[in-house]
Length: 232
Image 1 (cartoon, rainbow, N blue to C red):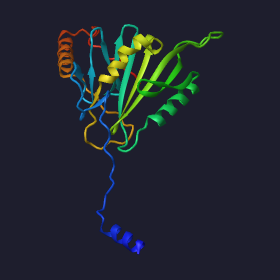
Image 2 (image 1 turned 45 degrees about the vertical axis):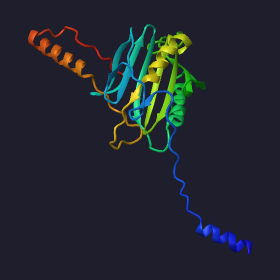
Image 3 (image 1 turned 180 degrees about the horizontal axis):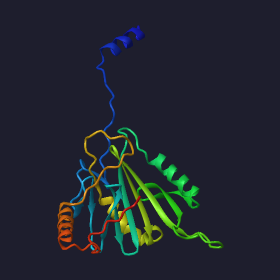
């Protein structure tokens, strides 16, 4: 009798469909463009909105003719940021972090996982280019921090080098830059790990075009114009 009553209650009970629980709102950056992020002075680079501050020098990294990353220089420290597409339902930082560590070790450096302000990161010492090539010379190494953040359909990689890689006070400035970044992923389909393309701000594009036009008119082939760092 109890079994029949229980079965009848189960058949008449409302059906509860358990869907995916919504992702909790972000309490800190880097932010997604759809987040309710705090206002700040940012430079619009298309796929990234980068916070700027006094004493910042901003350079762009290139992949061929495309802008794929940005570098922030502050005193004796540097921050390089790149954004990539990622799967909708899973992050890629665990996989990328393991790959970075293997590449650093294979190149003659050292790498280890550690906890940082954004979660797991890689603390590494990478071989310094141009050193250790001569006979009897020890290979130089540079401390570097690899930071990764998985977002909704995007992944942000930050590389901290220079003084900020070893000095917590210097690192705090660049970590705040990462926290203030807004990633504009867009709705178009992109394969995982494809770089989210960036662009020069409108003012910078106009300035470059004007300077290039003036250079052509004056026929000064050795005059230095706007400099953009190229990282391959």
